[in-house]
Structures are given as C-alpha cells and as structure tokens.
Length: 385
Image 1 (cartoon, rainbow, N blue to C red):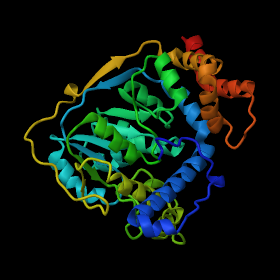
Image 2 (tube, one colour):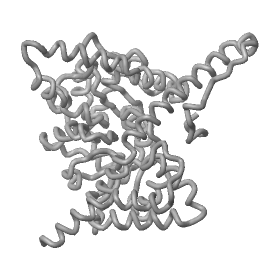
Image 3 (cartoon, rainbow, N blue to C red):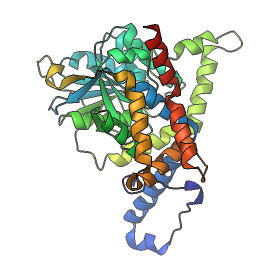
C-alpha cells in the first residue's frame, strides 16, 4: 500500500465494512481488512515519528553530506548475506556467524556491532538509519574496535564526524528533496523507502546486493522474559550506571521490557515482516531462532570473500561546500513549477508538522537554518587555516 498511498491523514480515516462481503469473499476479505488495519497503524506511527524528528532529519542530512569523502558503488553478486539485529537471539546465532563469516557478507544493524565485536566478528557493512542522537552510541564501537567495513547510511541518521573517513553506501529514501540534492552533488545512492525499522531496510539492501540466500539473526520483535536486547548492548552502561539497592538492574530491565511491550512498535514490525513473507522470494531464513522465518544455516563455501569484488570506492573532493550547493539546488527547485508542489508537501511535513499554511519564505528560512550550523563550522575551519 505504501507504494500507491504516500500522504494520508490517519486522524480522518475510518474503515467502513460491509459484512455481506465477508460471506462472499471469505478469507480474501479478512486478509484485506487485516492488511488495511496494519497499514494504518504503520502510517500513524510514521506520522508521529516524522512530527517528532522531521527537523532533526533535515539538519542531519545537510550535516552529513558535508562529511562525505568516499562513497561506494556496488555490483550484485550471489554471495549469501547474514543480517544481524540486536535482539536477544543474536547470542544463539553467534557461533554460526563465526563459522560462516568467511563465506557470507555480514550486514549489521549498528545496534548489533558491539555484540559482534565482542565475539570477534567484524561486519562488512554497518547500516545506520536512526536520527536520534542516542544512536551514536551504537556506531562508536565500530570505530573503537577499528573495524574496516563500510557504512550503509540514510543521511538523515545521526552519524559521528568519524564517518568522513569511512566509505559510505548512501541510502536514499526516495523522497524528491533528497533525490534533487544527491543528483546535484553527483553522489551515488541506492533507493530504499523508509520502513521504520533498520532491519527491514537491511533486508531491502541485501536483496539489492545479492541474489543469494539471506539469513537473519537477532530479529526477535519480542521481549524474552525481561531481556530486550542482546548482550553486550550499547546502552548497558546507562542502566548499570543508575543501579543502586533501591533500583536494582533487574527492576530497570523489567520496567523497560514492559514499556517496549506496551508501545506496540514490535508488534507493528512483526506484522509487517509476516506480510512481506508472501512477497519476498523463498530465500530468507533465520539463525538462532525466530518465530517469523524458517530456520536455516549458511552452507559452507570453503572460500574467502573478497569485498573488493562487490564494491568500489569513489572519492569526492570539495565536500566542504556540499551543504551550500545542496541548499542552493533545493531552493532553486522549489521555485520551479514542475517541482514546487511535491517539494513543498514533503518539506512542510518535516519542517512544519501539523501546519497547513506555510509560506514559501518561511520554508526557505527553515531550509537555510538546517545548513546554518554546518556553514558556520566550515567558515571557522577555513579562517583557522
């Protein structure tokens, strides 16, 4: 449904049923009703997220393009792919991943990097899409452990400045405003729509990179007793730091598990994955246990992977002025009648959520403000030199 319905106000949507249809269409009717309800839940969740993070996403985007030194081009292969999330079952999958790491391409959600590193496993690609500053804690272990892999990033994500030294496979969410800026700056990208969870984006990416089997590890979408994530986990120190005899660690874990369960997001993602199973090819399996996908295990290939066969790096000079050039291209596009309506609709929902009457001048000021911090930083660096 996301392909055909891009903008919808869930506050005004009501599902009206005609019960005689159930007698005639039976299972098809139930399936359609269930799919519609799940779509509305996902859309409502995305709407709330956009309202809360829209401005931050735009600021992150223009900050991050100023830190791009190298991007990646890819060639599709047949190598199997292992995707790791940070669910508790990742611990059960680690021995299998250790055994298969030389035969498979490992794509790790940034939240699983610490657990992989602790087991001596280096991811080939670390994928990051979260725009919140807390997400930086997941990426720092990648640099602390001196991993040599690449980054697959949505440029709206929160990324540390160290990323400028790492080759990046840019993920474009397909929005018009991002496409215009990336085209102007001649930055290659792969188009993957936003899914709400990084693991869904990782599956989409894996399908672009390979025609081989895909194995999922640590994608639980559920709480195991009071355990919400694999161990070790990037946020563990935050919980341990607040422990005392009145608030023991287990009490904090119990409260967190309850909040995650009540939030409902895990159920939304789980239902989305189950719905996708009917559309995806029969080559997606799970390692370490998963209640959605069939169990499987990568077959030994007795080979050492060479990622140079799959990726090639492209260097970009003068990235310090990418922010200014991107803003200029975006503002010019807004003034062109063939682009104006689509761009304003996209950017208004990010920069002015819930507001219907936004002038073009207000929109221009908000876009310029998104680049202001990066521009000032660049000017200070030039003056210092």
